Structure formats: C-alpha cells, structure tokens
Length: 160
Ligand SMILES: [Fe+2]
Image 1: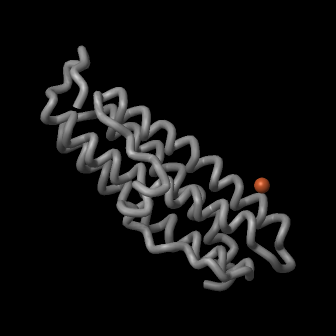
Image 2: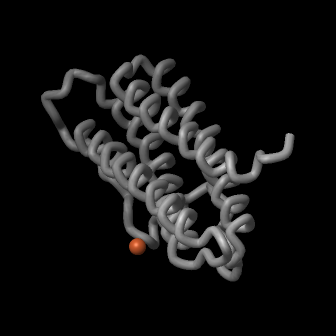
C-alpha cells in the first residue's frame, strides 16, 4: 500500500483493496461478457438485444472505473489487466459458441445475478469494516446490477 494522507488505517485500506480488487476482476469479466453477447447475438430480436447488451456493458464499464479508482484512492493498486482478471475472476467463463438471443439472455443473466450476489456481500463486508464510502460505492453498483438483471430477465419471464 502507498502511504497517503487518507485517515483510514493502513490495515483497513489493505483489506478494502483486496475486497475491491476481487469485485474489479468480476466486473471486468462481466464487462467483456456483455460485449461478447453484444457482438455475437443473432435471431429475430437481434437489434433490441444487440443494443441492450451494449447498455449493460456501458453500465458495468462505469462501475469498473469507479471501483478501480477507489482502490487507488485508498493507496492500493488496481489489477485490471486481462491476464490478472483471467486468473482471479470468480464468474463462470462466458460461452464462446452461442448465438441465439435467449441463450445469450440466459448466459448474461446467470453472470449478472452471480455478480449481484457478490456485490451485495461486498456491501456488507465494507460496512462491517467501517468504510461507509466503499459500502455506498457498492450499493450504487448493486442497484444498477439489479436493474439490468430485470431488463434481461424480463425477456425470459413472459410466462410465470
Ligand atoms: Fe458495438
């Protein structure tokens, strides 16, 4: 950790760096997965899904930057290379050979839901560590994750 005038204790900042980097890896993986879906989806709902998957990407991309910059603000190092993420993401690998819209909706919903569950755990963890700012950051991520999970799942919920 870098020395900083930030008054949060170094030990606490170290714990937050670990927590934030774990979420950064998952968010970067999810960001790439949403582009994978955006590029490769096919079928009768192509244009709507192509655009929706890009909206998911834009939302996740913003959160990636916010998470990474919280790490550096706390005196840590953000680990955002493709190689680092490949070694540390906890999400299931995104399928390479699907094309159907429903298959992409299911694959991206599965990963968005998993990410959402881990972000909710990160809210609790940062709250327990006593960092209201990081908990607030994760809360914003969580709210958008829930929203886009709804956007994706609404396509899959026409029948109860
Ligand atoms: Fe595009």
